[in-house]
Image (cartoon, rainbow, N blue to C red; front, side, top):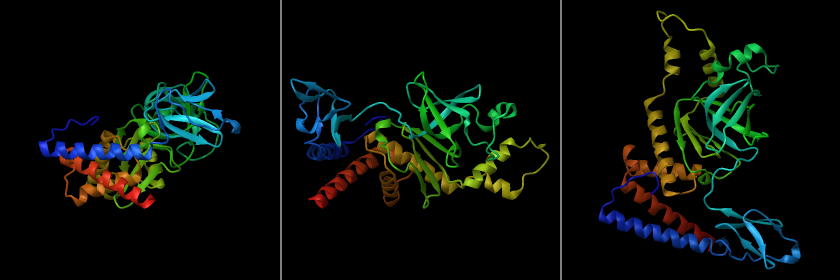
Length: 326
C-alpha cells in the first residue's frame, strides 16, 4: 500500500488479504521456473557457449544469480532482471522531465535519475520550424521556449563524458507539456514499449508513460495548437485594455469534462502505482472505466473500497488469462 494511507474496515481488510494471497499464489505459479534469489543456480547448457550477463556470475562451473529477480534469455545471453530497480537510461528512451536550470546553449532537466539531463539548443526544433544554425539571438530567446519548472517530453540521445544524459527533441511529438498533471511513479512499473504516447480519444486526453517514472496526463492538443501556443508566448504583451477574442478565450480554456477525465485518469495511475501493478494503457483505461461503472467519485477512487475492488478485478483478470493459456 505504497503512497496511500487507507483506513480499512474489518470486511475490507479480509477481502484485501484474500485477494493479495491469491495474487501471490498466481504470481508464484507463473514465475516458479524463472524467478531466482541470490546464489540460486541458473540451469544452462554449457555446450552452447552461454554468455553471462547482468546479475549472474560463475561459481564452481555453474552459473549463479547475484540478484533477486527473473531470469531472462536472449539468444545465448542469460541475465537476471531485478523486479525493483532504479531507472537506468537507454538510448531511445522516451522521458518526461522538468526544467530546473537554463545554462549556456542548454536546458538542464530533472528526470528522476542520479544525474540531471541536458537538452542542447541545437538538439531541438526551433519554434519557427526552420532548419538553420543557432545564432546569438536564439540563445537570448531560450527562456521564451522553455523556462524553469516547465515540463518537457524528450528522447534520450546519448550519454556525456560525465555520465549525464544528452536529450533530443527534434520531433513535433516532443516539447513542452501543458494543461495536465505530472505524476511520479516507480520507474520499474513502466516497461519499455514501442509506443509511449497514447491519445485516449474517448476522454480527449493525452497519456505519456515516461520510461523514467514520470507520467503525464493532459488535455489533447493537436500539433498545430502546440505551435500556436508557442507563437502566443513569443508575441509581445498586448495592453490590458485590448479584449481577447471569444475564439481565443475558448481555445485557452480546458473544458470541465476534460479536466474531470484528467483527474480520474491521474487517480487511476496513482492507484495502480500504489498497488505495484505494471502501468499499461490498458490497465489505466480499465481502472478508469471501473470507476465509471461503479459510479465512484473522483476523490473516492483513492479510497479503501475502490482499492479493494481493483485488487479483486486483477485477481479475476489473471485467473481468466491462466484459463485461456491452459
